Image (cartoon, rainbow, N blue to C red; front, side, top):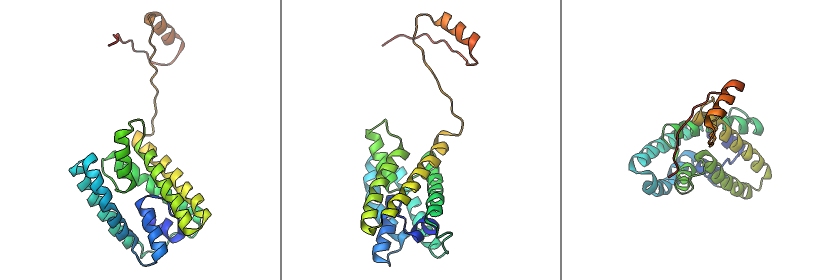
Length: 209
């Protein structure tokens, strides 16, 4: 995502990789992968308290491998110089990665670790949505640094795509809905639903506590 799509088109999509791309844009010499490893170290230290040693060690492994391969792929010619195509396919790659990381309890570090910390406090938030919020802040800062408003628009495409792509990986493609009806007329209601709808009905006896 970073080396073949986003970085060659100067698209700062957010996260630590986005910060690394921005530093590479400003300096021109700092390797993106190496910078991402360096920037992740303090974030992993923060995650140690909230996520545990085992999880942080897995993150460290992932961050190291990710950084190394990012710099290795930097030697491969970019797949496209079309910023829209780069945004779309870069977002797809990131979405698959984020979904797999969260599903199998790994992490690419960076804003995902920060998102996990936030989600321990705000239970109603999903990790992938929180990641998108953090990344949006990085994107805005990146647009200011590069003085390129188009970067903001391309980056928003990346964020939208990877949020949508990661969702079915986390929740699955099949979706079902459960409706709970609290009533004193359970028998009558269930008979009506069974007779007039294709839905299954289960009656539960409950007591308020």
